Length: 348
Image (cartoon, rainbow, N blue to C red; front, side, top):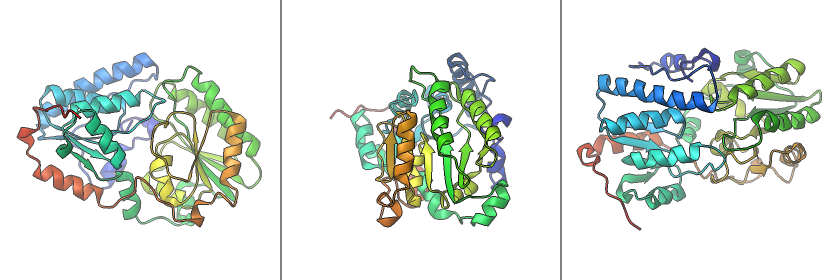
């Protein structure tokens, strides 16, 4: 998605931060069907094989569980390049990423998990305990490091004005659901529409390049056209704009992993809709509901009640820690890479 105009050409943000991109791998097709995603994995495997052959890396560092990452892991595995993987051991039972994540774990040699329970799950899958490190989530480190923008700076950067009540909405396809994405996201929009008043703003961010993602994009654009005074949409807000915006929200609504990992650190509620994130560890500030108009409305109303106020108590973000990247770099520098390839199954 970083290379796609449709998703904001976000590789440019990487270069703007002063990094040199040594190789770009094109994988994304102009379709979001299951067949197109399968073909994208194949294109990615070919592209990563060429990249790794040219760059000759000593080790590959991968983060997450998307299908592009599976392509990178497959290419590295067959080229006998050790793999270090961030965010293994987690569970997202409502989408195909669940299977992809665990597959990458079995192809990887070093594991950097976000919580102790995820570390135990990776070991349960037969990985050597000495190669599994519970360091926390990298997203939390970003929160601790960046200088947040003021409300006025955000409004100038993104060309919108906050209202009295402000919600950020991110909804991704649930790739294992039988009910269509159009029907499910339609229920979400119906709930939001019934909550609109003169002082309510919904800030939409676009979904990932998953099966049926374009259906959601089309529906968001139509909603914003019909409610221009109460909604705005962004293909990509950029990391600093996104994290800074979280400081001024009443809640985050949708099914993004960010609502569970980063958002609790801002002491605001997350309305987690459906099963996409089912199985993940969740902070006390997360309110779960099904994909049902009335349940979504009730969850949003609960988030606004005084008795449910994450700011009123010292919230513990289960993913929170500092200096994750420094710890990862130190481990990679000192790892005996030549001894990693021949893995032994750790039998509990």
